[in-house]
Length: 188
Image 1: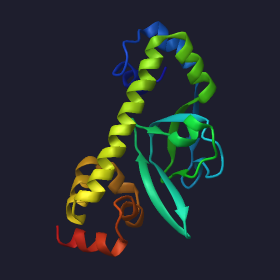
Image 2: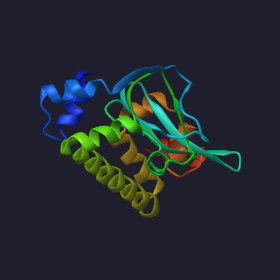
Image 3: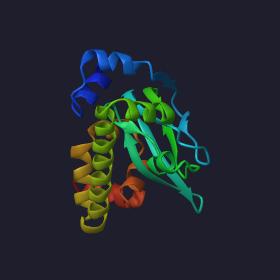
Image 4: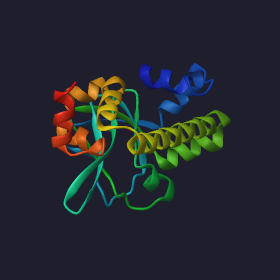
């Protein structure tokens, strides 16, 4: 199993080497070239990707306007969780902002692992808790922070994203116009 993925999983549950090597058979590698998709809106999100390198952006389109919902950088996961859990078509697309390496596991394989070992159930539970908390924190920040505070927090938490994402993608993620983001950056 990939060393970064192994470390990621071992921080969540007490896997030993044998268990992880057995589970490695369920993971596949994909290189997603810049501007290509890990998931397109309207398709089912039937896999979860662990980003080894590169950068992915999740977004949805409404009224001919793209809104960024998430950036997946190395060591994080890429999935439309709503589509994955409910087995419904995705409202979001996930595409590569740069060449990106992903190790992914299909939904059916993950559920087989859930049934085989409680440690995988723990992985699922902890990841859902983490996702929920991050979503709640983002919502609270968007509602309670100034544009300057939002941008400063983003700079501190996502320095790698700043190097690869466009300012319009970052602005939409922060819930502001590109013009507002430009003003905030000038006043820094």
